[in-house]
Length: 271
Image (cartoon, rainbow, N blue to C red; front, side, top):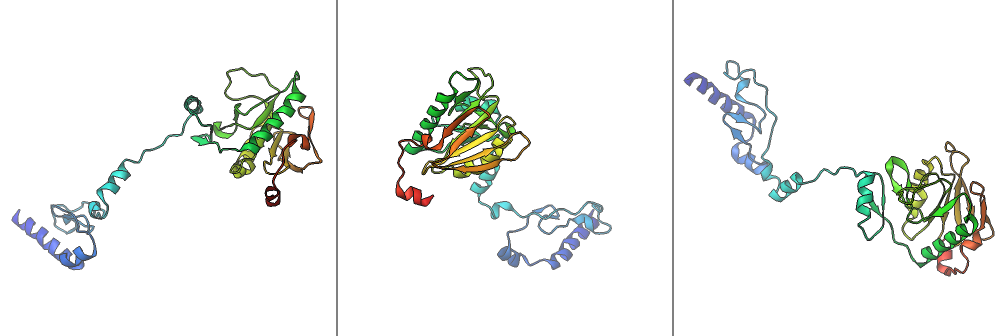
């Protein structure tokens, strides 16, 4: 036993020649942790020497005392970071019913809907008035803005208006067979409406037309297709044009959607 202990002592002394002295080490880096005859910072243990009683033990991984390089608060914060699980659609609906604000569901979590303004509200009202007048007593019904559309990965969007020609129950959270969707732009919804929702609505096989209405000037961006496997064909409409929707059998003059609304010259110039 005495001879083995001597070999261990000599080994640690021999190894110490290739690392800085304790004084130099303390200035350059946190102190290594020694447990018995193992040096966790140096990357070796006494079993490395031939004839050592611990020969054959694998070299250990270097380890520096983390407490000296990381504050206790940082360590606690790291340990307490929660692992968020994606929400289900059912969880979203149950949670959203208790909220005063409006939210959409992106397939994993709720997303707050951007606020509108008076112009957005007026144009949305004119849109619903035009749809109601033309679709009343027909096979298709206009709904919105509280009627949901399920898109990709169980995401749920709430367009400003939609038209469906399929039957649905009064308690339905999402509407089946949606054929046309409408979004009225708000000051901060441009990217979502023009990019994100364009792709999501394209993934809904029943949707044949997606109409984006400007809220700071007269103008419509119309995306249409004849079948679910087709890409959108895009058309821009202005004051003298007519929005034709053969899939639901109606037409609406663009000017009617903006009737009585006067835009400031600054808004028109910025567009």
